[in-house]
Structure formats: structure tokens, C-alpha cells
Amino acid sequence: MSGENNENTKQVKVSRKTLYIVAAVFVVAAAIGAAAFGGVFGDLTGPAEVAENGEVVARVNGEEVTRAEFETVLEQEKMQYEMQGMDLESEEMSDMLGELQQHVLNNYFVIPILLEQKAEEKGIEISEEEIEDRYQDYVAQFGGEEQLKEQMAAVDVTRDELDQDIIRELTIQNYIEQYLEEYLEENPEERIDKESIELSDEEIEHQYQQLQEQYARLKEMIEEDDPDLPREQLEIQLLQVEEQYGEVLEEENFEEIKPVLEEEMIEERAARKKQEKEQSILMAHIEELQEESEIETYF
Image (cartoon, rainbow, N blue to C red; front, side):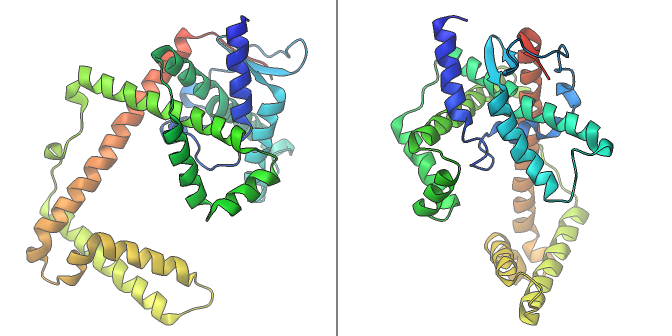
């Protein structure tokens, strides 16, 4: 590879070190989740051979994925299954292990690399302010900076390395947002808006009854104060329901509250359909990138 490609590979290797520290580090995860363990990525396996030095598991347009970084992430994923009592090393689970290996390679390496490469073509850059804002998000997620630093220290990751991972995450996120915006500008008929959502009276009333029942049940479970029930989680759920549907829950006359609840439901359904549409668009784009790219894998 050229010197420029080598430098790009070096930067990716640094950022990948933190893949298993921060949950849901890639916004692309939601979009590619439906394709995990096969699907459109099932044909990516390539030639069944081992790289000459045994240290490379894939090349994506010349960019290498090392066996060490691949196995680091794979082991983290395997641990999640082992915690559920699965033995992926057993003969019965051998097929699933192969699917898990492909899932890790595709979703943690191949696809992010393809998206990063496109982002580089677009000249996408991340500012220091954006990096700091994301870092503070992680601080909040881990319950404070000290707790985050403890997790980083436990897996031998520095702030500089985490910043590289943040740059990678935001680069992919910004590229996806830019691609979707441009795609929908060119294909406005595929946009999802609230005006396209229609609800029947039956659907609205059914939702109203469900909310009332859920709310009553949550309050009942909290009042019971059963030590086997996660009281704190129940209280959080109750608060969330009250914050979103407080006006609905206080009104016992369905006809009075129907317009308010209908608007809430339309907002939710439009948001869900928008997410589904964006995932579909992104999946198609990823397929296109794979088809036009040179991808070699070695297991």
C-alpha cells in the first residue's frame, strides 16, 4: 500500500482499541443490526485461506484488519453469549461461532471502514468541540469522569485513544447524516412526514386503554414494594410514562383526550417509520459500497 494508505490504517487501528469499551459506539449499529449473522453480509466471506503472515483477517480496498484487533472484539462478543450460558466452542455451536465471526468482521470492521473511506472522500472533519461534547456524553453515560477513567484504565486505553475512537464514530455519523440528507433531497417521495400517517379511532382508543392499564399496574407494583422487583427501575418507568402521557393519564374521558393522544401516536409512528426508511436507504448504500469495493477476508 502507499504511505497514505498505511497512515490511514494506523489511525484506524488506534481507534479500534476502544470498540469494546463504549456501548453502541457507532450510529450505524442500528442500521446494520437487522443484517447481523448473515443477510446481505452473508456473502462476504471471500477465499477460505490464511494470510501469508497469519496476522491479517481482512483487507478492505487495501486497508488491513489485523487478527489481533479482530480477536479482541470477537472475544468481547463471545463473552456476552457465555454469560447467557452458551458454549460457542462446542461442536453443536460451531455454526453459530462462524456466524458470530462474520458478524464481528462485517459490523465492527468492514462496514465502518467502507463508511470511513467514503467520509474521507467527502472531506468530513471533526472539530475539537465535537470531540469534547461526545466525551462529556460518555462521562454522563458512565456516571462521572472518574468512573469512565476507571473503565479506560482497566482496558489500558488513554484519552488520546478514546478521542481517536470518538473521531471515528462522529466521522461515520456525520457521513451517514450527510448521505441521507442528500439522498432524500434527490428522492423527496421517500420522505416520511406526519401528514402521511393515518390512525383509526379503534387504534387510538386501544392505545389509551393500554396506557391506563400500564400506568395503574406500575403504581400497583411500586406500592407492593416487593423486594424481588427492581423498585428503582419501576419508578423510572413510571416517571417516563407520566412525563410523556401525563395529560392523557389524568383525563378519564377518552373523547376529551383523543386529539392529544392521536398527535402523540402520530409523532411516534412517524419517527419509527422515518427510522425504518433511513435504515433501508443506508442498507442499500452499504450493499452498493460492498459491490464496488475490493474486500478480501481470511479465516
